[in-house]
Image (cartoon, rainbow, N blue to C red; front, top):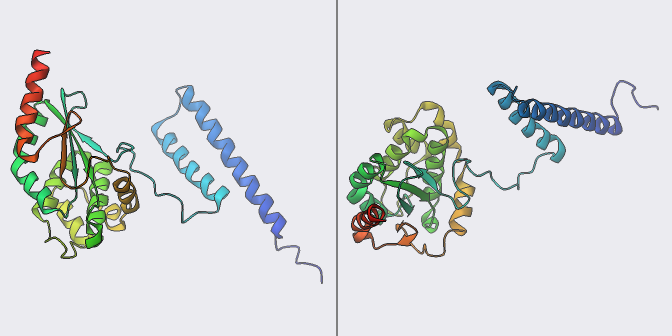
Length: 250
């Protein structure tokens, strides 16, 4: 019996897929030429990004094992910078939202950090890690939520960072649920549209990767650097003041 002429064959489907992929590639090339000519609108840029995702899906057929995308606003080493990037002193804070010592450091220094950051004296880069993964997945989920807020509502990141510590569960107690983390975010002023990113755990795999690839000086949390030098936690504020004094006289 001859095949039903109305039913596409495997070769037909492959040819059709190649044709769609070729059309999509040509569409991307046209969009790029328009961008270079300065004629691409913001809406067209969004469309081009969607096309790029579709092209990858068509050509690869999807890959569940592909590396999870990093949040674009974070550095390759997993840091999100708040404040004026050109501030005279750079502070780096490596933290785990389940770490009680991190909560203690935050409580002791948040007012100082806020004041110095708002004055333009320091830029503060946060590195959310899951060093306490042996106790469960809360550290990774909380850090993923922080990445979501940094991406979609960066102006609320500092408030959400503080709120996570204010609502920190006991170490090893299992942690907050994704819905509870989203509620903490809402109380910190994070818009409702960020909730889906938080509850999906979008960046949990990325958090684990940057934790594994972290600066070798970071053996525990919190680890704090002032101008790329690890400082004792009890000397943090004095170290910042000393660094600022050095910039004033240089």
